Length: 331
Image (cartoon, rainbow, N blue to C red; front, side, top):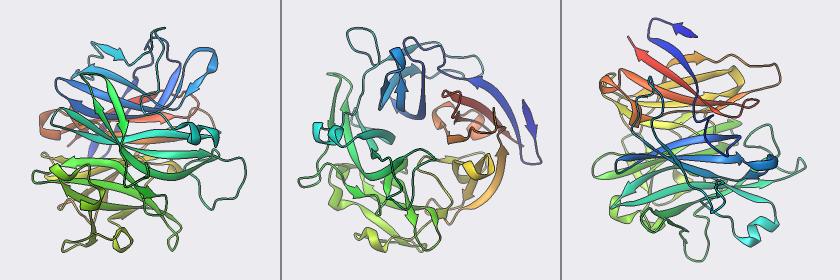
């Protein structure tokens, strides 16, 4: 498939990771640079006998997407099957909670990964869902991964593992290092608009483990506040997963996300990291069958070429349940 518009040319490169040993499918597919490798983070992961673990991870080299993967290393147990990298507590498991990794960043050889805690719920007791399945967001937090001893810890805020409630936002949907500060985007449900919107916070790198040093955007001047309830929205109609990068070719900050209701992936741009963002173009994505949907759209800046003139985007088709890879070339 190849789509041409006045702004972009899109080429479908097919499925990615679908030949990974002992994995039958997964979604999510966030990517973080870790030294000479890329750490890929996935949500619910299908393994043997249709068993599903709530998240998993893969390391790859910095590969050329047009030529395919050269090396894949799955984080596995002794029997060779994938393992959950961010574990729910025993209490969370009792009430059917799962953890889905979001985005993160590598600092001082440590990998910080934001995540959302999801509760499986059979009824309609909540006003909004993360998808058409019976999941609801409980809150979000931060985990710290040390690659050398291969150790992951969920970090505490005072006495709780969750740093934000679902109403405050799923912070970590996209993370960007902008020099003096790290900027973190988070989605939340705006009750007045009746849809998901995006908030923004920033912090100094040394303060990443201190939740009380985080500051939230409260105006486009920009102004910042310690109160998340004063935060403004930088864009709207965005699901839990997205990406942010500075595209040197466009000379713009670029947000990429899925728009399930329109069977498409949306690209938004702004001159300023804090927005506001406006629509740049929309990439239509065909359904495999009438009852499926496409989600988890995001760019992987680690793979970009020609200063961002060529970027690579993944999304997931619900029925196929593997990340799908697109090459986007700007004109």
